[in-house]
Image (cartoon, rainbow, N blue to C red; front, side, top):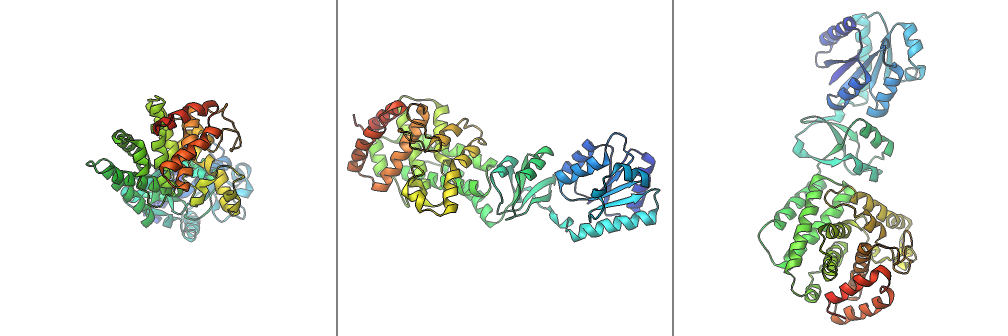
Length: 455
């Protein structure tokens, strides 16, 4: 723990240093001369238990500095020191009157009087358990996640910390406690790019699962159906991780390895109809649907002679995360907001469904190496006749790549719901020739039919 003295008067800096060194030897004494130095120290060199602000600062307003500190760094014990008339003219009364954490010291410095005030401030710190919010742990005990993830949450099931030093962290967000976007913006203004989440059993399980899945994906060749099951597990872990934590380096690495694995398996498929008939379903849940949708998109693109790696990356990421926050499996069958399944949901689940497009689109923007998938995710519930949502865009206004995903997403979901047989595939295509053979859906539908060797 440290004490910070903000002053431009070297003589008084020496006086305060000598007092604190003698009476509070376990506290390091640090000085700063302006607000920028203060912010740098609070961000990178803390933790600071007490901040003493000299009201004689020439180039800084002590009231403004204190307000900025409290806004950006949370509650701190602050002492304004100066002559009585300087304090009354330069410090807002509301900053120290009837406040438990801000104090006033009238110069000149007296060791006994100053020590008494410092002890009073430390009592507040002890009562606030400020020191208990600081932990010293190994970096391997934390998962680093980008700050911008937290804009998507109102609360998280884990404590989140700011790193102060190599193995020193201070609590920033308390588990299961609501926080605001303003708090996240305050961290951002301080130059903080990542928060660190202490691993608990659930998080350790997810991190361990990611490592194991990547290891298998990069390991020796195994039968295709076994590899698909590993890919499905990768989707499931991705969804759980995004719902709990957001984007991290490990979850981005998993996406990259899943993409390479899917591309590799696809090159080994000799007959796509047989591949679909033999797909290793266990639960027919959203994770299995997501992987199958990706394979359908790859097959359609091949028949359309779309060989762009950029395009397939967009479709892969869309397939991977478009429904990540939907936990009720029946939600995957909803095609528009008039669907009977939607109306059977309670209000909370209806709101989750309404917002899942926006949340997935925002997460897509965080992935590196999978650029510009956001618009596909935003449109994945649109329909050729304009009865989809959120915009009700019809086939003439949807780009071809969105049409590829919309077509295959709907086809896979409906095919799974009715049961995969040769006849069900043929019958489903008859319906799709009526509903999807229009506008920018024509070529993707033609490509998908060619995949199943239908003219």
